[in-house]
Image (cartoon, rainbow, N blue to C red; front, side, top):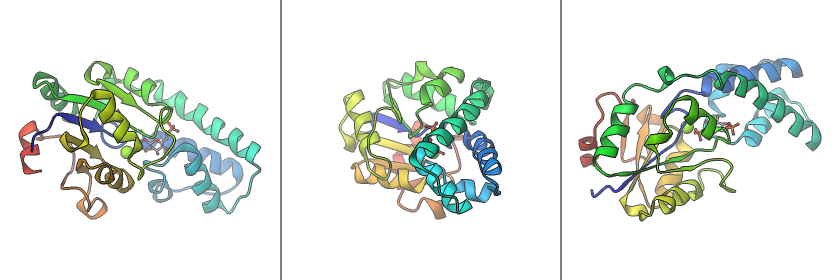
Length: 215
Ligand code: B16
Ligand code: MG
């Protein structure tokens, strides 16, 4: 396959921010009087902030006014940001930087396609901005994955047609978004959860541009 652009989800692909989301959501649940477990947290991966809050409230059987929901989401985000502000490049997942360097050396375009409104701050902390030609995040899209909007905007921003793009995703909704957008997809994680992807790998260790020949 002729690959001209690689589009990356952020959380679960480039870095594991899920652990910080978990601490912040669990603190909020605690305040609301119920327990939020790591298993519950799996349901929030790749999901927007407000949808995550709705899932959390459903788990706790708690009903809040719209105003209170916004206040709670802001409170969670403030705590979450206090953790990600302290992140360092050591937290980049194994093999990611080598693969990004290989893409640069081969003139392949790159973009981030993430649901997170904190993506610019995270990329800054990880010192990864230099490796991306475009950043499409939760501030730039109106439709959440599995809608393909975030990846279509990424492809458009780097000037490459969808059929020449590969998306790297760890969430089933993100894989669906890539396929709906007419792109190839490499799932990062377990094949059972990412069955729509053309290729599933555990991560970027031992992954190279030649690995995409299988697509
Ligand atoms: P924020 P991704 C997603 O990132 C996370 O997986 C998800 O857990 C989070 O709720 C969402 O970003 C929104 O994050 O509150 O920072 O805007 O996987 O799309 O890179
Ligand atoms: Mg993700």
